[in-house]
Length: 331
Image (cartoon, rainbow, N blue to C red; front, side, top):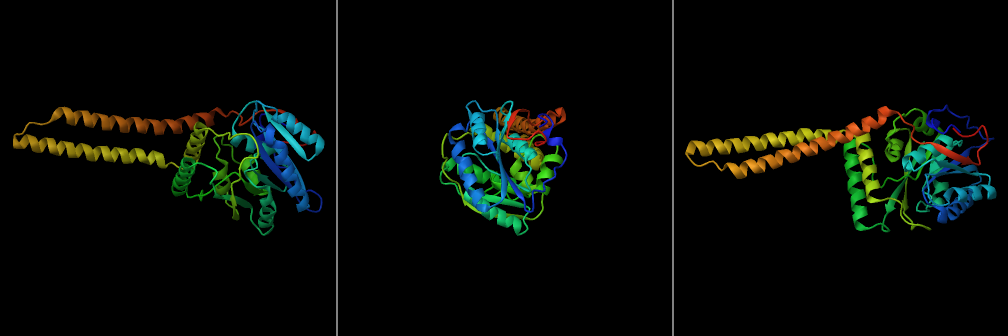
């Protein structure tokens, strides 16, 4: 496997016997405690589905024994394969690494903590057989999350849906992708700042959705911090919409209207011979304009930062080690 430029390699031959194969991609960060149970649950579902499969677990720079657990699972079942990234690159990069190594006719991406129910996989495969090239598993019930988390996610998804034209309501990383979509995401989209949920919908093709209830974690603790979620939200917004840049124009218009109102009031007072209340008016005006300027600079700065990250053209991830892949396998 080419550890640096895996996302730039060519397309694979995905013919697997007379039928088809399924690649299950699991990004994992510090999931050593629950990974065995997750893999076993998926194995049972795949055996009952009677299709060829591989489970690719991408260790996103874990500090625990996640990769050792992957190696143990590979000894038990050769269909379990592992990729260890040299450090934590983030879930989006881990998903890209897994999809880049997937040999299946279709790939299913899901979390390694069993919050995405494996029992939904046969239904997703049926949707694919019926013609869907992308199958989205959509969150129906998030009662395990707190009120603030649910409200923030709902607001973000609604705003992104309105500004980008994508349907992000209840979106998750639990998806099925056809080989054509996999190759598109891995080989034809060179961007570094990725938002997988949005890209899968943006790709087009025939798409369908299946609702599911988010389950409790089988083991371990929640890995997403508030800062990480905020950073993902910024990546999503800057990747799919320029609406925040238009906010600057709106702020400019508001400032202009406010300035006109203040100027008219000052001139009217001067013509009437009244004393112009200068101090308070000037302070309020300066604070308002200063706030608008700082907000505008912040919005522009976010887009410039994303452009800066793209033009450096650094790899999305670096692979430190693999297990379960043949010499000719991988990206």
